[in-house]
Amino acid sequence: MKTATLTDAHTVEISDRERPEPAPDELLVAINACGVCTTDLHMYSGNLTVDYPMIPGHESAGEVVSVGENVDDYEEGDRVAINPSVPCNECRACKSGRENLCHDLTSIGGAAKNIIDGAFAEYAAVPAGNVEAIGDLDYRTASLAEPLGCVINGIDQVDLTSGETVVVVGGGFIGQLIVQTLRTSGAGTIVLSEPVAERRKLGVELGADYAVDPTESDPTEAVSELIGDVDIAIEAVGLPKTIQQAHSLTGPGGRTLVFGVPPEDATIELSPFDLFFEEREVVGSYSLTPKTFARAVTLLQNDRIDVDSLVTDEFDLDGLETAFEQMEAREGLKKVVYPAQ
Image (cartoon, rainbow, N blue to C red):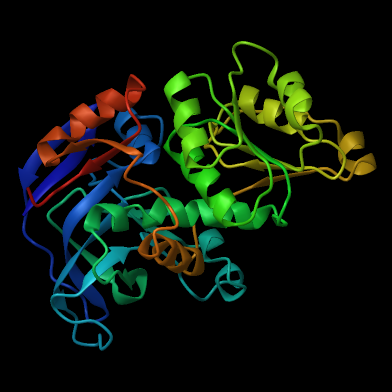
């Protein structure tokens, strides 16, 4: 089968390797679409420690072509989306329904304690418990159930109540997904803070009530003038500066969600007295759970989330390096690769 393998930082090698055979509890899936994530970019650029060579890619969907002998729920020809997070199902986190915090988490092509080859390949063997049937949902849309599941998990962390005011800091692909999911989840006023005009315009089209340019004026003042108090601020960039900025937007009782992936050694300053006296919260969100993945598939099947507007570039496996280069240059939004082409 054809694969796109990272052999070193900034090096993608297109090569052939033997097609895997599914274990008794696995499915062999022909990968029809795989989104390119910022995590993949970090692996490519060397900013995320991985053991080369490895096949990245963890936002995928495809057709079942072979079924392990112990699998009864799926058969050849089934169309599925793949959840790349494989929990142990034995640790305390897993048993409490927080499989994303599994003590021995394995990721199919993504970031986790254990990483196995992912979906930038024509085929992938995956546990039968890690797929969701997608019916007639197109593969490109279904491949984006994984990032949407992560977004749903993030919004769950801040206990959104209908009608609450939310600011989203960062209008990239994830920020645009967050805006739409907030609208679907019953948020009241939604403000997007984003320096790129095209992304501000898209955010308003997809559900934000206002969009502000943080390079033109202090977003804390701009947001306050627009809507007053902010209940929730969601940071979708991953920089200490924007995390601090998001926290500064909230008032008493406010919650700040760190969704963007910050550098491992980054730090920010917070006032512990403000956290105490004003009952403010700062929470994080990592990955997704089986439940949020299933919810994401349902939202996509029922056209609650528009991903077509977010996909700006499409490639075959040979174009993966070009996709990474575009992402480094901040060109476009979502890139999708079609391994079978």
